[in-house]
Length: 62
Image (cartoon, rainbow, N blue to C red; front, side):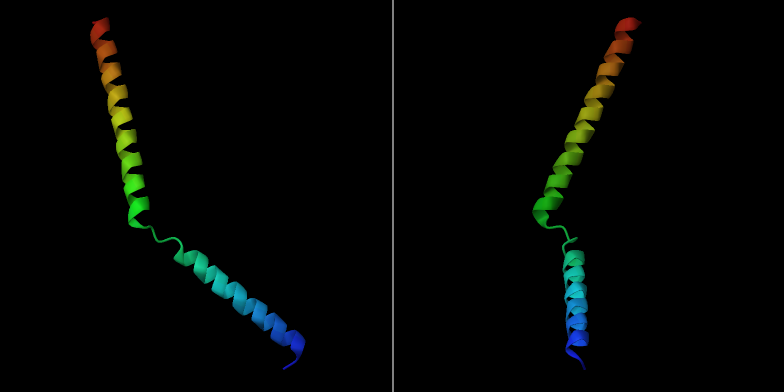
C-alpha cells in the first residue's frame, strides 16, 4: 500500500466518522424537548387569544 493511498483512506475514514458524529447529534435531550413544549404551548395560547379577540370583535359588531 502506498503512502498516497493510505492518506486517502485515512481521510475517507475520518470523514465517515465525522458524518456519524453529526447524525448522533440529532437526538434531543430533555431540556430541548421541554423548550419545544414551552414554545408550542406559548404558540397555542397566542392563537387562542387571537381567536378570543376575533370573537369579541364579532360580538361587538352584532
